[in-house]
Length: 67
Image (cartoon, rainbow, N blue to C red; front, side, top):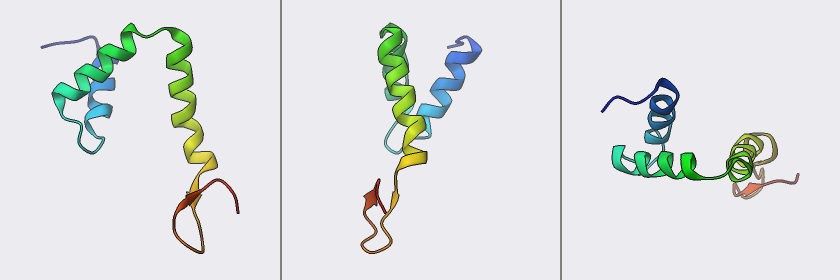
């Protein structure tokens, strides 16, 4: 099925996640489309900030936000 380009891009990115196939990507994308702007902004910010704030611990290898 053909979707608008931004939706196709989202589906493609979601499918790159482990365990997420085409059907699950569609479910997630449609959930995001139905969600209100505040929820979507919170999700986007959480994804964006994880790369800046979380890293592997140099002693144990678990993920941490301190060090």
